[in-house]
Image 1 (tube, rainbow, N blue to C red):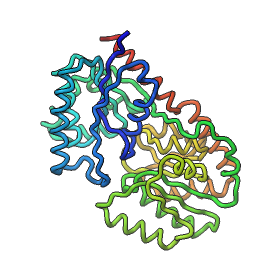
Image 2 (image 1 turned 135 degrees about the vertical axis):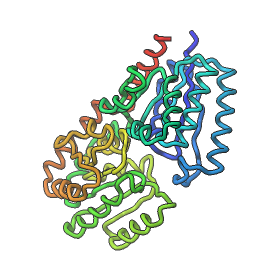
Image 3 (image 1 turned 180 degrees about the vertical axis):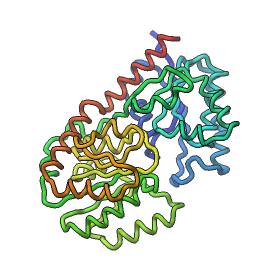
Image 4 (image 1 turned 90 degrees about the vertical axis):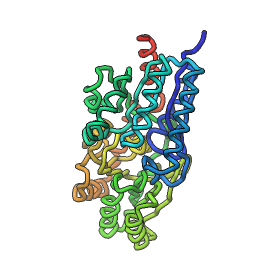
Length: 372
């Protein structure tokens, strides 16, 4: 029996970010046993992540090259489904929109659009009339929309009633036991994992971390993630604070694999307080898998993952006072900290494994095929 063909238009790691991680999970999964998958890779492999979504010669050249290759691909291969992730800025979505229009012209396959973030509606409303018209034309060609949380379905209700919800999921520390040796100790390690961007809340976090270090002798801060080399002011402030406390603040740069596993296993508390829209960050799911209580902010579908007072705290973005108070509470209350960590692990295992994510995506692909 011939397998249905799916064209994946998207990015893969490196660099590591939500969309590329999600695509890698799908491409490496049992999905390929049910479908014939073709990857149309649009990854920008440059190390400087500050170039993403910006107008420069390389990005324009790359987009034109990708458009021509996509036309060739669609002409010579018949796909039942074209699957792509939406970008949420003008230049990147202009490319995505052209992909959608090209797919609608050169293929009879159903187009599935997947949003891993939560800012698309605001992005649409911020755009001028002409650009909104372009978005409207593009999205009329989408057969099914996917969002990462129930609270985000409203984003695409203007364009369709075929909106599916698929929470992110990742296989991380599935079979690791013996957390007590990491979590029951006198020193408290607070971890931050994510790109060191202003939008990710690294400044509120480092300010609060500095205050906690000054108050508690047993608190240590571990930070991991890539930097925006173009934001020299931010990097200078981070470096200045880290250099004052070389024995208490550890910056590891980008971590992956076993290094990331150990980084999160050794943590007692995980803090990720973004101040800009997010979807369902994989770093939170990984920290939950490592049995950490989560202190985060109300962005995107995070509040569907982190339940207030159960496995962590969900704060107002940018509220440094609340961030300090919740971290202080977890430092001072060992039993609550351990209980919330165990709750994180249970929620992860019950809802957010990679197999859960893949199974839901297979169901959606089969549902779309049944409507063909």
